[in-house]
Length: 294
Image (cartoon, rainbow, N blue to C red; front, side, top):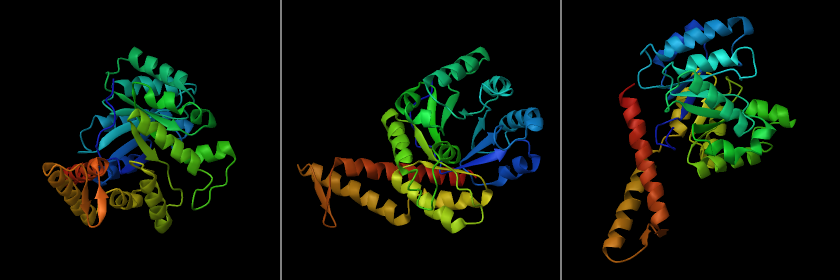
């Protein structure tokens, strides 16, 4: 089965309508960390078969460089879902993104379908959290062996909850927080939901900063213009990298001198701060590697 959370950058996770050949071609040049080839919401019913074929072809093409490639299927209960899952199983995709997961039973059905189709053990499932039922099943969903990420579907979730979404997302914050907590408890990735107004890049950046402050690993996107902003927000700054190195150095010096804590710039440094600093440096290194291979 899939391993638990890693430090692979997923700052920018861009949905692509797989029926749109031009969008698929353009994405080869984008700096997105992850591409989701979409077979669900962005694809009209009459284009589902074409989208499936093009998504699987894109994944196997070798034209997308370092990017993590995943495919979002239609739900198993739709006319297209079973064929989607069967095709994705052996497509070479890193993960299948499963919409509107309600509970572990849904995941078991997807897992069984993947196995019947010959999916490798390391094909991950990214479970979309976009229903009220999912909120009550979060721990089981996050802990399911094939699940590697929880992806907020904030549009559908707000619709299902009859919630009014304001710029501060106050009505969704409890649900964002509990989803993030479930992901962290299970050791899987957590991705924030989309921002709908593709022209409001200021508002988008503010929402990215909110998601990063909450602790999300990155954000799902719907437009290429959002990619560089998400990458910047979810990358440690030069000052943060410098301080992380100083935190580690100060703590290690204190330990060598027989002390269990250190003081840096008047601030107490304990082992948990060192672990945070080490993660900052590891994320920065991973981001740098991705940039160098783009």
